[in-house]
Image 1 (cartoon, one colour):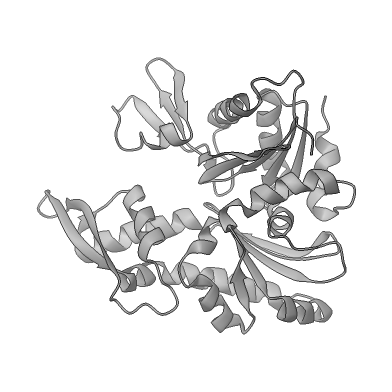
Image 2 (cartoon, helix red, strand yellow; image 1 turned 90 degrees about the vertical axis):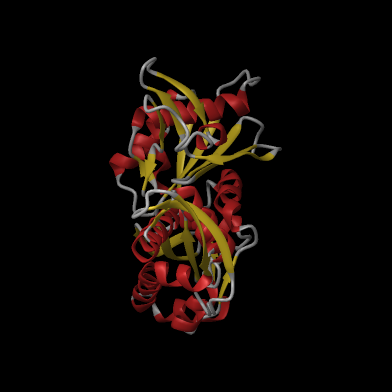
Length: 339
């Protein structure tokens, strides 16, 4: 990976960028702050994220990705441009860029991603599918005819795939991931406690006390919000049992998807997966007790990769060296070798 090779894990929740020789240089929320009066972008990333829920109505915090793909081309292009400018400001040559996409992405969605990167100043753009990047980033050798299962849970999608001999054998993608967990927690607290909380509060609850395997109700944290009946600010305690109840249905959807992929996996690869285990990557992999819940339901050892949030980004960086060897996950590159 040369100094002008840039890898982008363009996530629904976070965008992580790697650059040759320097590793990860950007890890910020996928958010753009836009001034509707002046029709201009005010901030991207962390600075824009801090503005959510704290600005006048004419300044909006836009999330240009939904369910793992671009939903707002203009804002996505502005965000990618700004991030690339941050990391390649002193480069004389335009960079080669490789961008990660979910395994279920359509050609139209892929082209939107590629065109956004080209407009942002890329010399050449490649795409790679998330399951391939996730396993590479987890340090798994996928070059042998040996089956591995990866479950990559991001902000918008959960990708479940079986990979062997540098290619994807089977993959499924569902729109159940980190953002849906947050939404479920907001709904649960609203319905049970009549307390309205924001998405940031829900995310903090998920990160700090979630336990979907064996919640006991003795782990709590204080939360603040507006009481729907009184209309006044209220502070109350929420427990790990509450969080488990809030996301239980979504967790089962992910487990059911894993089971459905296992059901159609060739028998030889099933033996490999039973021996190698299921690898969990992505920010959603850090949901407390998720690996244990998957192990219990599938009877296959499940473990969280080291530093799961940055797994895909590390895999994207590694993919430049392997572009001649990778099969399915890199197959569509030739469509996008624009000058």
